[in-house]
Image (cartoon, rainbow, N blue to C red; front, top):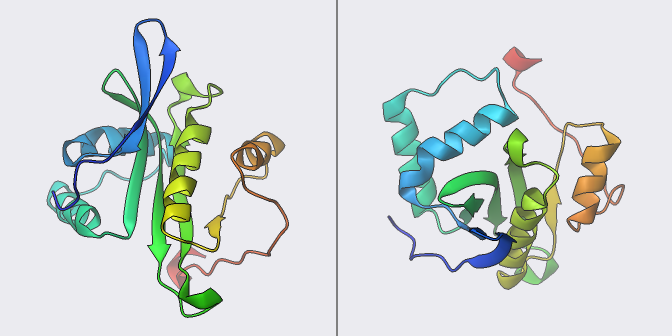
Length: 167
């Protein structure tokens, strides 16, 4: 693995269980892909050889961070943060958060908020001047979740371009 062992933040949860918010490790790819199934259940499984190569590329990129909530060695929530170099704002980078998901059995317990706040702390340590997050959800409950995690609604207007075959 290309990255040093990450520092983590442990929080008490249940008497016998500790929640650890940390960066993912290489061997946790299968659990990450299981979580992603809850984010996009209709996605086809990835070809094994391709996914391992992509995963190694991700782990070796110092600008990519995959944050997880771990309870007893089981991943229950995740998001990923990309730090983008920039030539405006005093050459300060900006961050983009994607693929926010919590396992359905563990929702509404604060795990998603904790992984987002951990991602924000990394971004601020990297001197990012902003962090962006887009959601396709229109559910008020989801939008309030992001606000509670530190994001503001309506500050900017987002646009997305999709490849012609996906329109």
